[in-house]
Image (cartoon, rainbow, N blue to C red; front, top):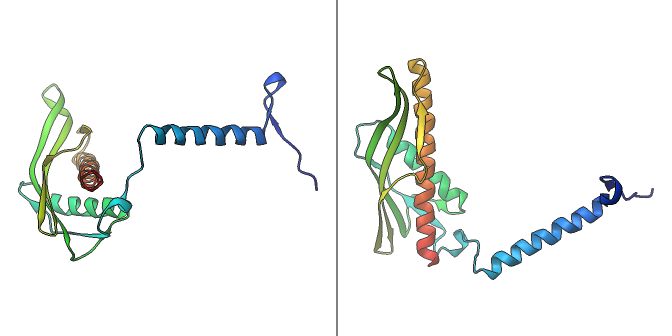
Length: 184
C-alpha cells in the first residue's frame, strides 16, 4: 500500500500535509527559542522545596455562610493542579482567613438590582519551617459579577457560580504568589 502525499489548497498555494507539519514544527521551535532567549521559563512545583502542604481549616470572619469550605476546596484543587500534594501535616502550613465579603450593586433599573459584583478579601499565611510569609487582602484579579434578574432560585444559582469563580481566582492568586516566593 502506497501512502500518497495529500495537498491542501489549490493553485500556486497548494502545500502538502507533510509540509504543513514541518512549518508548524519550525514555528513551535522558534517560539520556544524566542521565549527561552528572553529569560522566560516555565515555573511550577518542581521549583518548590516541598512536595506537600497542609491547608489548615479556613477561618470565615464574614456573616456569609459556607465561604470557608469553598475556599479550602479551591485551594486544595489548585495545589493539586500544580503538582503539590495536600496532606494532613508536614513542615509547610497554609492558614487562610476570609476577612471581607461584599455584594456591590453594578446596575439597577426602576429601583431593582439587575447586576451585582462579589468582592472577597482573603489573608493567607504560609509557615515554612518556622518562617512566616503573609499575603494580605488577596482578591480576585478579575471582576466577578452576576445577573440578579429572575426568580430567587435563579439568583441563588448565579450567586453560587460567581462565588465559585471568585474563589477559583483567589486560590490561583495565592498559589501563584507562593510559587513565585520560592522561585525568586
